[in-house]
Image (cartoon, rainbow, N blue to C red; front, side, top):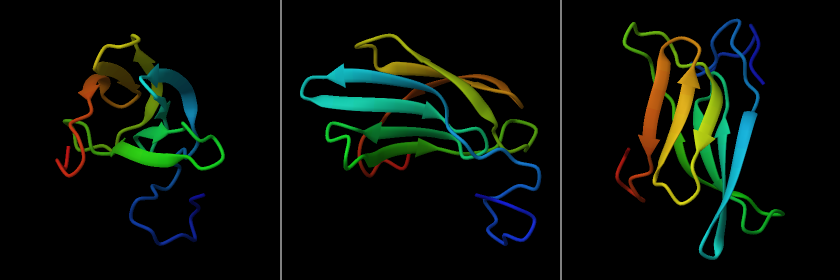
Length: 104
């Protein structure tokens, strides 16, 4: 949780840091959760074992105006590699996981 006393650069004063609009999808033997996380970006979790979720992807950046993303919505069509995130500061993002170690 971020507040005015937190010095972490990822915390923006007045920012919103909570999950929103979770999409859950089964892909083969995996269960993935796609989560819009306001100022903490987009997160994808492997929740195959719901008692031990694993973060497998995250996107957090700035929009074209240099303002930190503020994702409030996410949508995914089952079995489609793309998912869509709406950013309150910058519009619609079309995303696709690239794989471990890609940096994307």
